[in-house]
Length: 279
Image 1 (cartoon, rainbow, N blue to C red):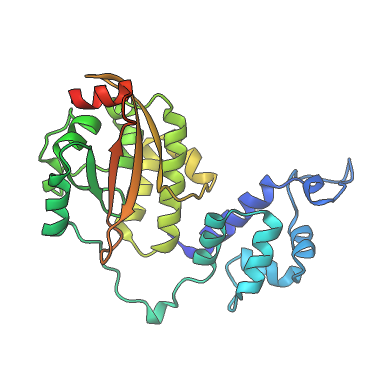
Image 2: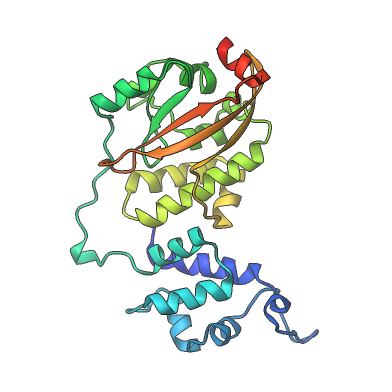
């Protein structure tokens, strides 16, 4: 994933999404070929030179300050996540000082595995930054992927990837009653990771495979959504226990290359809690 081209595509997508009238510009009815903001309009509103902004969008800017990026972010009305993504893309580490690209660890620590297995009443799993499943407990496997071998996370060649499953595994897709919302969120979270780890070859290969094999993924990826995914509610229709709504927490494991633990819980006294007990 090339930082310069990704930066330009991201800025263009956000310019296109912002209508002139939203920022106080009245467009001429017959002299406008674009519906979003033009480069010169964005530069004017952000109080930066059109030359500097154009160089930034083309990936040719050599020095980019926080003030400049914050001004552009405010003008484009970017969210906090989108602003962080903009800065990741605009200021990647210089090539000479970059460490050799190293893949994230493919195994979890003994203590993390023990914690996972000790969580006997809630489904839980550990993912790496690409969303490869490194481990899951019994309930995690039963909830999310009972159609796969329980030991599949232990074998790199068959290790499940939650984003790949969401777009290419029909049984996993059917688990979600609001699949389109889940798909958008998954791509938005993966975009954020990709901006921070542009030298991750395996991540780039994952994006490439998904783009070639899923029109839905390709369309979402091209739209450049960006959002963190730390907590929320999953609305599911489990083939074994029926409808089930579960809250989830996505917790970063300190001292790792982006490993995170996801745990699912049901509200006490609900039908979802009863369904969870049946897994």
